[in-house]
Image 1 (cartoon, rainbow, N blue to C red):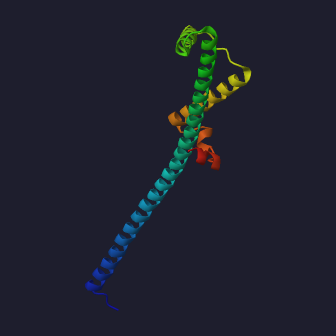
Image 2: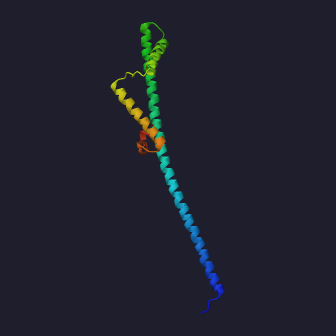
Image 3: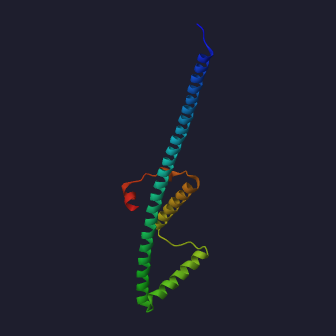
Length: 154
């Protein structure tokens, strides 16, 4: 059996062609797997960010509602004190606010009841947790479960 040069060249060309297609297929699979891993990482990060945003919105809503409540309480106290003192409620509010701000600026501790102090500590810890997640991407906020109640709040 005699093998001519054309047959050798044809076999070499077929082998080279198959090797080229094999290299292209290997490159495609490698790029595809990188893309799939990247998409999965983005989804995971996106899920964590969404949970953090919902958590932050929930805490923000709580803060706004509490602020409204405190302002209503402040107004009620100012109205009652103004009624007894015979002065306008706005002057009572200005005077009391100035005294509290001065105490705060002087570093004096604020007087609160024990239940409120615990809520403040919890709120400050939650804020710290969100800050830690924003800075490092780690923390319990990353695993925060989004409940229906939080979805409604958001």
